[in-house]
Image 1 (cartoon, rainbow, N blue to C red):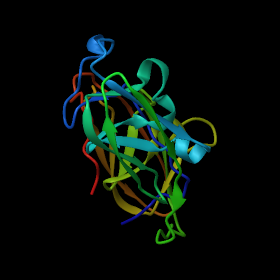
Image 2 (tube, rainbow, N blue to C red):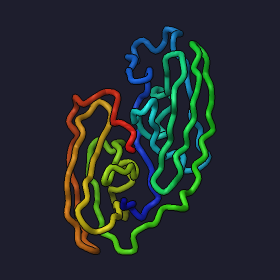
Image 3 (spheres, one colour):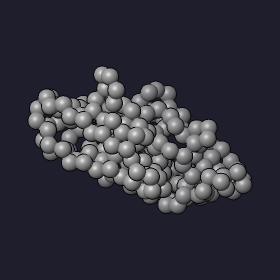
Image 4 (cartoon, rainbow, N blue to C red):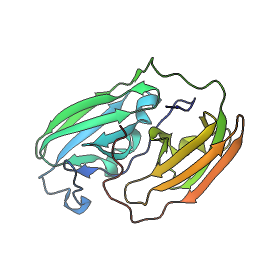
Length: 202
């Protein structure tokens, strides 16, 4: 499995979930739901992707204010993921009307070996909050890999780029890259995809 040679981050959207079910945000104020606040100390945590009960919801920094996490009462599993880091896994028991805070700390994964020779992919995608996966591995969110001086570095060869955001259709693109090649992936995501987002990569 190939990993990009950049510190990765992630994307997030409003998260209102049961184990596999979205709860419409219009009903979020009825006191039935519980709130979970995720707090990260550094940029690594802030840009890490969040999965709730196996479904991707976005990156940690977005999950506050109008995009706070509201869950149905019961037990839920929260996984925070960042390329090159060990997954942060936390089970929480949510109670109606209560708020709980979880401090997230990511630890470097010493097993990850980054490629010595790379190719470069620049992403021009709207919305730029969308999550980016390379060969099924979450690597960050679009905004990290576009603009001046920013790009996604990957091992040369055939790579499968997947871009996903809850509420939009998933975009997939297979690209063949040679060493030191520079390429651009450009698209506007189409609304109408699954609201619960993409499953947690295995």
